[in-house]
Image (tube, rainbow, N blue to C red; front, side, top):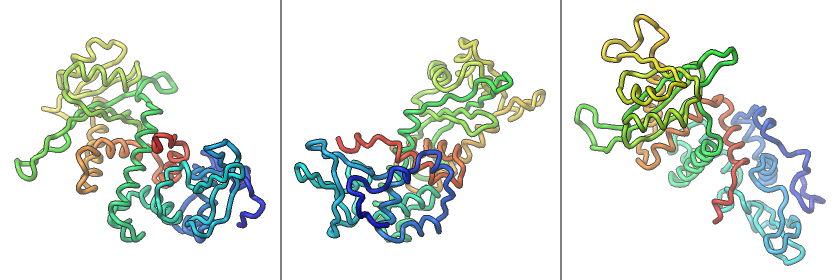
Length: 328
C-alpha cells in the first residue's frame, strides 16, 4: 500500500475497524504474520486496529499535521506540522511511543502474550530480553485491571425466568509453606465469589476475615436477591444475618463437601476456581508478591474470554485505553 496522496491521515476512514469488527476476526499466527511482512503493512495494521493514531493535530498550534516520509526512522513516516514545523513520531501518544522495537515484533509479542506462552520462550522466539517481555506482560495486565476498574460487574442476581442465581463464596490463603518446608512467605488471604453456571467471578484481597469484611465484600460484589452458598465459617453467617436481601445456604466441610440432603448445596465451583487459580500462578515461576493480585485479576478476565479470541480482546483493551496516564 502506498501512502501517496494520504496527506493528513494514514488510512481512509472506511478501513478503520471497530470493536465488533475486531471481535469477529479469525486471527491465527499464520494470518497475523502474513499481515506483518513489511513495515508499511505493519503500520497499516496498527492504525486499522486503533493502536496508532490515523490523524494527528499539532500539540503546539492545533494544526492538522501531515505525513512525511522519513527513512531514518524505523516506521518510515513522521507527522509534520506545516504551520510550526513540529515533527512527531507516528507512535506519538500511543502505548508504543517509548518502544524502539519494530512494529512487527510488538504485534507478535502481543499475540504470544495473549496465548500465555512462557516469558522465556517468547524472549527466545522473538530474540528479546526477558525484561522486555516482562514489561509488556505487565502492560497487558495493567490494561485488564483498568478495564475491571472502569467496568465493575457484580455477580449473581436473578436469571431471565426470575430464579435466584447461586453465588459460591470461599476464602483462601496465597501461599504458605507446605508441611513446614520451603521458603517462608507471609501469606495473603483472598475472598472469591463464583456465579454458578457462568464464568463470572470476583476476588478481593483482605487483611482479615471478620463479619464486617465479609459484609462489605458481599454488598460490593453480589447482586441483591442472590443465593449465597458458603462453608460454615462463622463470619459469613454473621455478615449475612443482617442482609435479608440475600439467601444464605451452608455446607459443613468437616463432614461433607456436598450437602447429602440437597446436592445443590455445595462450593465445588469456587473450590475448582481456587485450584485452577493457584495452578496458574505456580506455572508463572517467580511472581513478585506485589504483582500477585494483578495475575489473579488477569486469571478472572481470561476465564471469561473465548480462548481463541484472547488476542482480539487484548487489542480492544489497548485501543480503548486512555493513554494520558502514561505521559503525565
